[in-house]
Length: 437
Ligand SMILES: [Zn+2]
Image 1: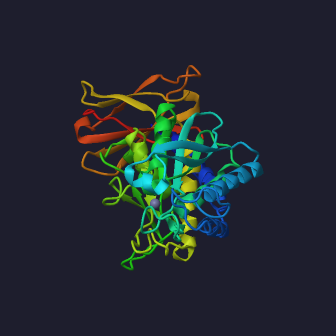
Image 2: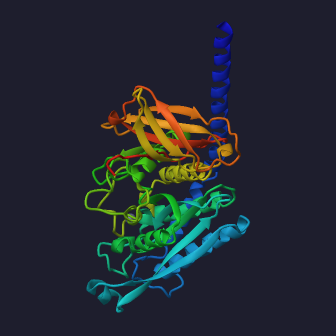
Image 3: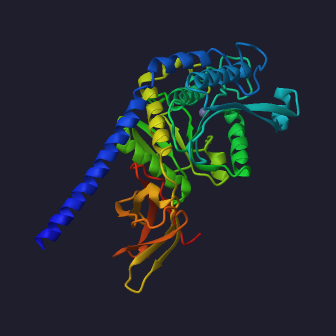
């Protein structure tokens, strides 16, 4: 008996020390990346972007130093420069498309349709086709959404989300990740999310394996128009229902941020967006992908969409941290394994709840599965249980069906989430299963 207890204690100690040391290695790795974010570079780049004076979607496309055309050529050239400096693995391209215009916009463009351009940089994964899309919109506006002449700096909205992409590219393109990261500077958010709608449709049509979309829109200001200020939180919007792919993704992002970037707290808002507003996560959600929006804690509606949205209203200390949070999530996810799919949740004769799921990866890559549990009226996971993978007999067991039995967890009371954990200790996004759908 004594011997048995000792054996169990030794096993548990070995198990937890492995997890502890893996978490330590991951933490160190992430920190080595977040340490590289340069506040000075963020500032210089925001100034440069604001220098294009007016980035309205309908603004000048010919000038070298003014308007949307000059802005996108500069973004493209920055991505190319970054790529050249990091070994040329990134794929940098203009995503061109035409948009038919409504009567209102025809008068502005003097055309029936307009050529629009997203600027995209892809850091290809080494061994999977799964994609995380991080976007920001590089167009700006002033009071009038069709004013192509007045000063429309858009430093925060959404110079911040756009410039974060350049900084992410600089740091991430030097690394080798398993999964693919797409950095997308999108056009025409202010006209109706046109750039995002195009990219989302394209992703759907080409069956791109998009696991998550993060829309960074206004991630640099900390003070609201009512004087409220907070430089420690960043809002994370995700739509209902509570077990939607977007919500699962939001909880995943929240967990990574809590564990690996405690300098900033995500304030979870369980809604698609702010009242009456939209953002570049929405078109992706409409196409069936998981999407969230990251936005500063409080907004100043006098500054937003005006000539006052200038760099001096950005907290660059805060903007550095919001960029670092993106870097943390992207680099963690890019090493993560694929999500297991729950195929059924049943009750066995002993009243145990049986989760049946398919192994998403060769079993040799995985150390186990994390089961998350919460009651149906709870918004956050309250419990997690780790199940090591059974000893592999065949090397490749991708697609193999597993069962996990849970005692005292009547399926009708709970929401169950399931994630896989790879040998390096990275966890996948959790999947859920809803009997109603
Ligand atoms: Zn915006």
